[in-house]
Every structure is written in C-alpha cells, then in structure tokens.
Image (cartoon, rainbow, N blue to C red; front, side):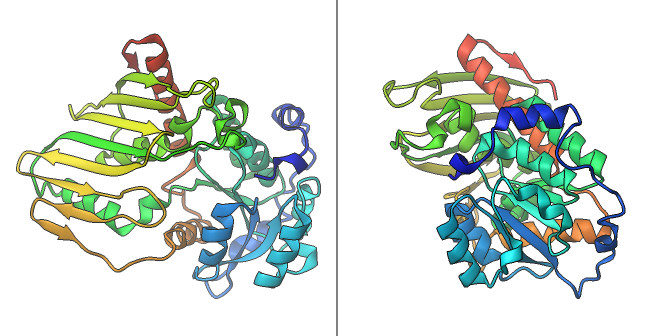
Length: 370
C-alpha cells in the first residue's frame, strides 16, 4: 500500500525486540482514558489508508456506537488532505510513519487500527503499544509465529489490549450457522468444504511478494477459511495434509498460486479446503447427519448469503460488518475484558497456516501443535 514511506522494518523490529524502542511507556500517562464512560467515544487512528480503510473502515467508524475516527496515519500527503476534509480530522491528529510514535502525547487517540501490508503488522503493533494505545491489527496477524508472539508480549508489557480484525466473528450469518451447529439442528457435522479465492494477476502488488505478503493466497485468503471453520466448530485442527499447484510460475514466484488442504479435528470432522489466486470462489458448506448448511458467498466483505436443507437463511443487509467488530473491542477496553479475537487467536491461525504450507511442500501429513 504505502510502504515506500515507512522506515526500515527490520531495523525497527530488532530495536523493539531488544527493548530499546523509541518510546518508553508510562503506565500513568494514559490511565485516565481507561475510565471513559460510554457517553464518550474512544478515538481511533487508522494506520494505512488503502482500499479497506477507504471503502470499509472509514465509513464504518462514522456509525460505531462506542468509538470514532479521530486520527489518520499515511505516507501520502494527498490522502491526508482528502481524509482530513472528508472526516474533519484536525491537523494535529494527522501523522506519517516517521512521526507515528508521537501519538503517545495525543489523548484523542485510544485505539490504533493497523491496516498495512502484512510485513508491517508486527512493527506498528509494537510501536502503538509502546505509545500507550490499544491495537486492532488486520489479519493475517503477522508474517510468522515469532512476530505474533512479539506483538502479544509488547501489548501485555504495555498493559494494552490487542485484537485481530476477524469481522466475521460478529456477523449474523456466520453466527447463525454456528448456532445451528451448537444446537445440533441437523445432527453431528461430519464434513466441511470451504474455499476462498479470486484472480490476482497484478505483478506489482505486495501480496505477490513473499517478503511483504508472507505466502500468497494462503495468507491473504486462506486465513478466512481456517478461522471460519475453527470459529464454527470451536475446536482446533490436530493435523493437516495439503497439495499446492502453480500454473503461472512467471507471476507467482516463491509462493503458491493454489493450495488445497484437509484438516483433521478431535471431533473427527474432516474438511477439504482450497484457496487460490487464479479464480473466484467463496463458500462454506457443512454436511451433517440430517441435512446441510451453507454460506455462499461466505467470506467477502460484501456479505454472506445463507441456506440450509430446510430453506434459506435471511437477515437484514448490513453495509459495514466492521461496525460490530470495532464496537466489541471498544467494549473490551471500557469493561477491561479480553477480546474474543485476541492476539492468541491470530497466533493460532498463523501456526496452522505454517503447517499447511509445510504439508504442501513436503507432501506428508503434518501434526499441528498450538
């Protein structure tokens, strides 16, 4: 997105992991804001003003009940000017990536929402925590397990809360499918098929750069499938087998174009999943003893459509799924409770994805240790 203006990531992460980051957090400098009543909204700073912020998060933050957009962080002056006019953001609340750490002095900011390319998630989560702010980080949480752990530890040390942007945990159709499963409306679930993919043919995008995206479609889209099934079943896989194919080797360098994988669960549910950058697919299908349930589409931000063997599932259309997600995190801060989509949740998905990639590359079943 806007990584050209960001300071050297590796150098910064090394400093932060050694405990010599730019900011030394004072536990009292920010404590007064923790006593906010619900009549006063928590301030949110969006870090990165790409399409997701522009089309989803910015508008959603105009409708949230417990928080509001008060600050932006961007490396593009023209975007800063446009957003300032659109959302009435004062100049003192506009930052670039080098001035970001000075948010420690800004009491208009309670939450920092990281919406940057994957390779910058760890750095800016750690910097935000050290600046005394709570953090929502978009998924995938980070590039690898070590970065996830560093993010969790930084937020714990700073006594700040960390949440990952799993908007579908708060979405009506996904919660209805989960309710039907929990109540065994169709008996025991035996098999799940789920896939998410779209065509990605732009060789300049950071998503196709392994050093910036972390692994292609499995990181970008496969994470929805992994987390969607885990959220439905409320259990974690114990083993995985996987197969990878790449037809366009000129475009997909160092990453897999398509991965299909099978997860095994303690309940003996078997899943067959696919993620791809070659074609559009988006569905979650659950086969049970006495019927079936499905969301098709399931994962994209346009909203799911639901159906069961008994008939359609219908809920009122929701323009921005992120409203409930963000408000839930605000309530976690106000009530001093842990987010249901915490850093530990994000870490589990990264461990599972790493196991999927390994299984595909060695051609053998891989046990998953979480």
